[in-house]
Length: 209
Image 1 (cartoon, rainbow, N blue to C red):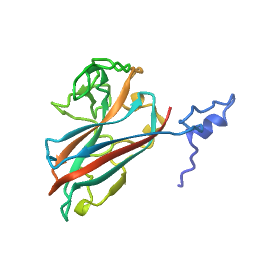
Image 2 (image 1 turned 180 degrees about the vertical axis):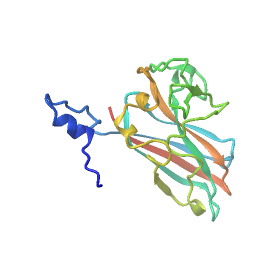
Image 3 (image 1 turned 135 degrees about the horizontal axis):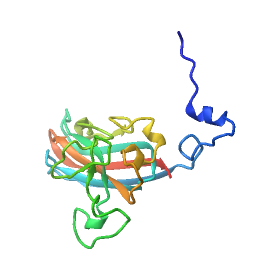
């Protein structure tokens, strides 16, 4: 028998009284975009990691994540691959380069920790890297052959789902109450470049908030 289904959004709009959808969760929104870039060197190997923005608030509802890599692996058969995680902002601990801490609302308990794949509010460290979320890529080949530009829409490349795109990040990651702060991105190389080369990693995120 064929399915006859109606979305929850339409069901709510057809109810009495009408239940209006929330912005970015069925109601229209003005998309926000932010981006960041890191310039890579010839030292890329499997111990390489990259803390990247854009820094986005915990209530952001992610609609699109794009990764653009140029250079980085100049081999005719590029092998550079990486995990792409969400990570708590490192601002309260001064960032990976240390220096004076800058408070952005992220707790020192969460700062620079990686939410795990359990999606229950648990976290791991960059050192332990135990069951990280890998939301937007798991061992994903990120470089094009011969150092050419590789542009990927990685929104749904791994465990981030279409249903999650309608949720604030803190909810999608399994926190029962909204914590304060911001998330960054954490890229961990899983397979080194066949021929490491200077290049660039560029991330662009579109979200509702």
